Image 1 (cartoon, rainbow, N blue to C red):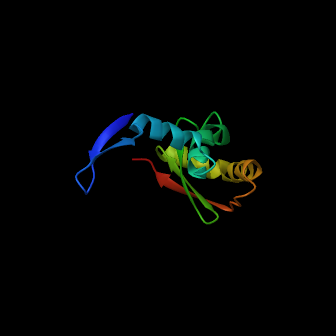
Image 2: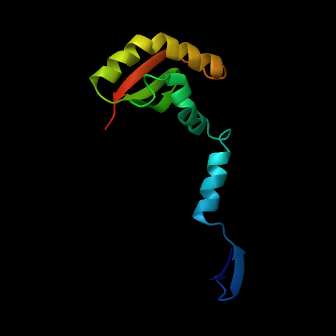
Image 3: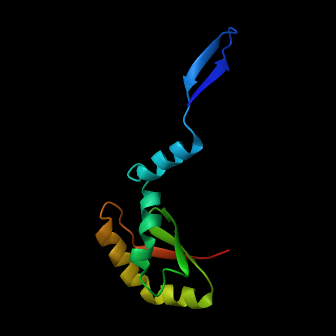
Length: 107
């Protein structure tokens, strides 16, 4: 898209400006630049069938993965599956060494 803008000198200049949709598409397709997008997108595979609908990836801080749990049952299940989830995450993403999981309450 071309937009005309008024420069400081009062001249009208044509600039190539991308739409929000184009920028968002570029951002999402470039998950290598932002690994959090990749982790969030692939969380259902890591969580497994029983947890994917009641949990979601939150963040990574150091060597700790933070995960949202929807309710006490999901939190308990995450605690039981913690070792498997950490092992699966580390095998998928060896560049990030996770050794703990923090469970957050889903709002």
